[in-house]
Image (cartoon, rainbow, N blue to C red):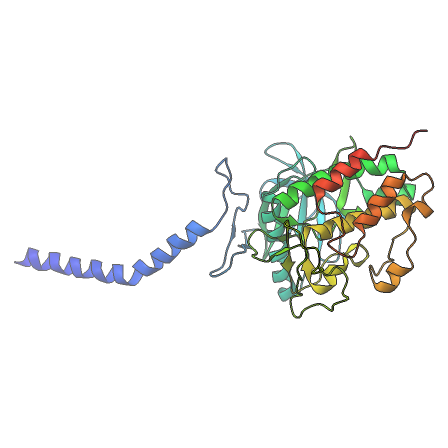
Length: 373
């Protein structure tokens, strides 16, 4: 009888424990199922980076030791040597992967304001997610995202070379032959990005790296926007509304109602205006992002490197700046007429008249051969 009573008490205790801790265990199991994204080798590219409840974007979990500095081993793996780039919100460090011996670039956050740090952390992780889905010879190689205190750092394969901006600072301008050699691989990178439903949104010379061996890499997808999960798709010829209100009938980049075509153009409506004004397409002022916006930015880049001047000035496109712009051929003697026409088509404020896609850009670049000496 005493044995039966003891068993009954054990049974009751088991039920109580299950009632208290069962839901907690269930939630932890569900969270574990949703957290890090694993890659083929079974190693997560987001080691220690997890998602808060209800969030689709992972945030960093603080490691035992945080912070970076020269000579320090970061994340137990990367030996940092020197700063190779910096801005108002972070730095890029050159380092060495102690496991592989390969050179790496570590992009870290340096923001003191907690609210801004949270926003920047989201942008960093979103950039990592974007690059993880874009594997292409002309796009910078992303390795992993790792915790850095309350933030997150991104690790890339190191690219030894110069940005196109640095090249321009040295040479002031390039001829068509050199420009074509740079932008054919840029077009291929954009083909891959757009095929992966990603809009770069900040194409400019500072984000185009030319390696010492001449290979070109597009980098800095920090403000890129994914369009794969966004249902906003408009047929050419239809009106594309801005996020808050419908654009003015005379607004730049507005879709016309006449001559509607069968091909559809993906459009993302955003609540923020990002990118660099001098290179931003007109429709970005309405909060509209499309793959053709990247093509407009390429047109600005081509114009700049061929003429040593920005087509619309530092403040970017406006009706006034557009009306006073001179054609690239006027400022770049010897520029092939077909190249001048391509730049004009890229800089069209009307989306219907702009170069339709990166594949078309690539083919036209290939067809415009350098002028004979």
